[in-house]
Amino acid sequence: MRTCLFSVLLVPALLFAQGSSVGSSYLLIPNDARVAALAQATVADPLHFSSSFLNPAILATSPSPEILLSHIQWVQDVRVEFLGASAPFSFGKLGFALSNLNIGGIEAREIPGAPLSIFAAHSAVLQLLFATNITDDVSFGTNLKYMYEKIYVDETSGYGVDLGLLYRAPVEGLFLGASLTNNGSMSGFRTTASDLPTSLQAGATYRIMGEEFDVSLNGTFVRETKAGRNRMNAATEVEYDHILLLRLGYQTSYESHGITTGLGFRHSILNFDYSYIPWSLSLGNVHVFSIGFRL
Image 1 (cartoon, rainbow, N blue to C red):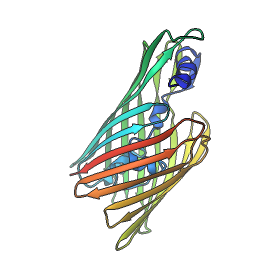
Image 2 (cartoon, rainbow, N blue to C red; image 1 turned 90 degrees about the vertical axis):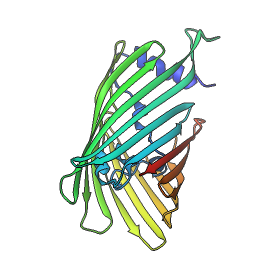
Image 3 (cartoon, rainbow, N blue to C red; image 1 turned 180 degrees about the horizontal axis):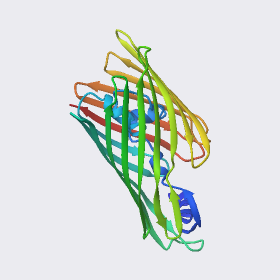
Image 4 (cartoon, rainbow, N blue to C red; image 1 turned 135 degrees about the vertical axis):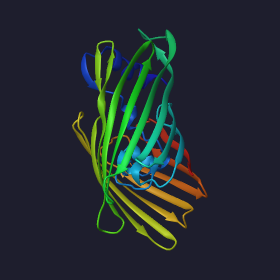
């Protein structure tokens, strides 16, 4: 049944808990099928607009205007729609993104038995990105976020910021990146104050270019500062003839999932990407579909 996890656990925790807690976990859901398939290990991944949401400095390396559309079918009937766009200017590069999360069919109960009503939970995030090249080898970026949440009749909003650096190492094909993401807070649901899931991330991407095959190796260390947890994400991407891409990744420290997979297809200005992430504990599986246009 669609409501057990959210109506019994999530909603009471958000609405009636006292003090401060780490909330807004939807900010950790990847916005794009490529990033999802690569286990969100792309904090140093150059030339890809989608990785800018892990490290906004990456936006500075994206060579042309882009449009990105994604549909994320997360676990437990969580659905996310995402729209992003970026464009270069003389002073740097700007990006914009809007995402909407919906959880429908939540049953409201006060006692066991038939539900009193059926309601939905909604979250929306507006993001504005800016990035520029400080030197030929170092890029800096920032991402300002406005978040809005509504559960039943309760609403909250808040602000957050991401900061990032990207370094092109002297070794050919090697990039190093670091970022601080989701630093901010939300106003309270009734008496509950909620911090954002702030993370410190540092990682590397190594690109091996061949005549027909290109290989990208990605690794990221993540420190969840509010939750006090450490994670490691690692992934590889193999691209054939700039047309077909295969991806495989792994995330540590999750009981419910670890392996991430996906594929991509390139043709002219069109990019199509798909990601599949199997989950255990009867939570279901994740499917992410993305269409991008590089103009």
